[in-house]
Length: 420
Image (tube, rainbow, N blue to C red):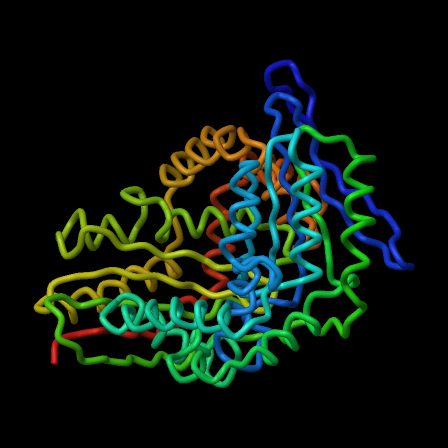
């Protein structure tokens, strides 16, 4: 709970029944600004669920092309006249449709959303438009060496799994996608039984409930397939990609045997922060930039998702420093795992993470995002507060025991774009 400008707010999870399905609604009322936002979130409907590379993203893009009756321009004009935003995006694990507007225009905004859901622009013209945009973007990525290196690393770490596939598809896969492919993906992945709703703003729950009861029946019950667990490779591969480049792009990663359900997330957060997430306070930045000046920045994170947890990091350096930088990354990670952190590092980390916490919850969007994360990862609401209390009380021994137990982080693989 918190008070902002005299208004008491708390994010809640409620359930309503629609067509014999219980639908969870993540809700926070905030009356200080007359704006309302609603997200329809479909789990197990992201890029890891597609059978054609790029299909999930292209399906999301089609929803941004208006209705078949009015087309992209006609539908957009209706929204613009009322300052309404309706947008769709897709991630690795979920598919999201969002509508937002001023409070006074929200009933009209929901009407337009329903109109869109009933009549997506399943036309040849819309398909050609979104394909043209995606193909242009993919063509540009041919000279994006960071993108090339990151893609190669995923292919190495997650070989044979959906996570190794191109995030946005390929020129060939996008060309091959048909309207029927998109219709089939939407009808088989957007269902009433994998839907949850996230709502925030100047709106009462009774009104929210009414809108959800109007929207949810537009989706049929589907076969909701849970994502299969994925494990990062520990083979310690190094992949070199030769390009016409003036510097080396080094991407690296390793397994992290850790569950998103773990109750000691504060320990992973401390380890992540000090290894590569703290900017100039991290080990990687200190050793590679500050002491040796080999790069402007080097970063690493401990990604903790439902299908997989793993270490991921990157840096750029001069071609002449490529081998030294690669060896240093390995050396820093090895030392971090072997010796852990110091008392001073722990105290500095506590001060920063505890002191910056209010900045992470000052907006409605931030609070809803955090609450959604708690719900999605099967944690109680307010999990972050519990973790902060644990972080404040944690001892150096506890942190170092955790760090030293994850020797798999040293099993680094590298993907490096270098000079031909």
